[in-house]
Length: 140
Image (cartoon, rainbow, N blue to C red; front, side):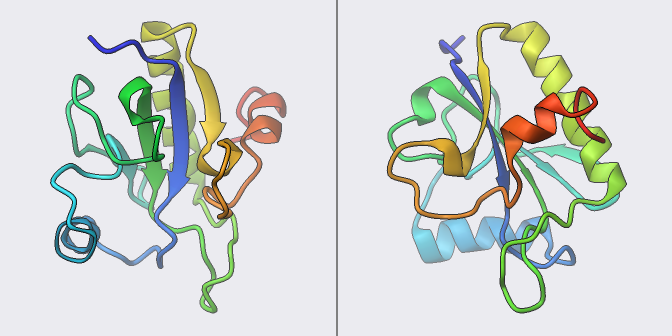
């Protein structure tokens, strides 16, 4: 197993109606990626879909992927493409559950937002991960 140092939270920066298939097509056809951007993606319903094995590297944060697991929720922007934390309650609960599970498996891993890494100039995941983690355990 890889040496996991980070659990990275993302948003897809799309409408919550965006399909996983369209996100995967974007990675493959527009960005030219062979591997997905996330290990897990969370639908608005709260369903967690694993897109990539944990043993393999995903394309979530340039320079940090070898030691990271990436989790994203579908959404993260409003209708004007402005960053907004529009996670549904189901997504918040699912995100808290998967973080709990991964922290048990990788207790030394730090949970960070994509925007918390050096050189990243984007709002992803459209919320302050540190504050979310501090408030009411996961502020679900």
